[in-house]
Length: 221
Image 1 (cartoon, rainbow, N blue to C red):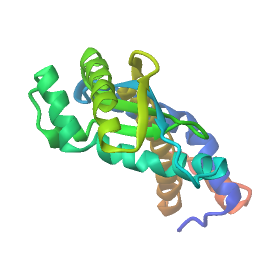
Image 2 (cartoon, rainbow, N blue to C red):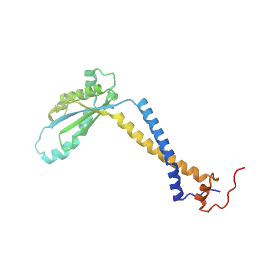
Image 3 (cartoon, helix red, strand yellow):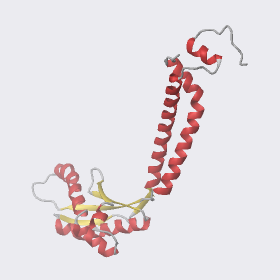
């Protein structure tokens, strides 16, 4: 006899198997966490802020400079920062054992909203190296940008600051996703398994499925 799956049956199955599914989900989450810590290299983010003062030209209005220049120039700064001129200079200063392309993958630029301040971010496995690269990038930008663009000056606002281990945050996300997926798949598996059963192990199983009372039972011989 094939069991019909109704909402009530599904709820009953989930209620009965919840603890087992929870144990399975916890075990899978622990395995994902341990594997991630073992195989994922730690990565740190170092950031430094630059204040860039564009030269004012005739015909520019305050609104143009604030709404147009400040939002569009960040793309230009990003291109300059990733250019071979800047990156080669940083590699030479720090004697880095990496290519221009490899260094380019580590860096990004963000513009502080409604301001002339940009933030340079460097992601690297070595926190001190990440800090050194960020500070050297800022020094190189401070030197080269006024030559390349219509800029009065570039000022470094502070030393490079390190954030926490970025890999730790990623691992936490992976563990949360693993827990949710393992719990969901476990419960779904139990529901499918119960719905495909054509035998009953206990009297209560029969009553739950058929809603019929049991009058007589035959004991095992």
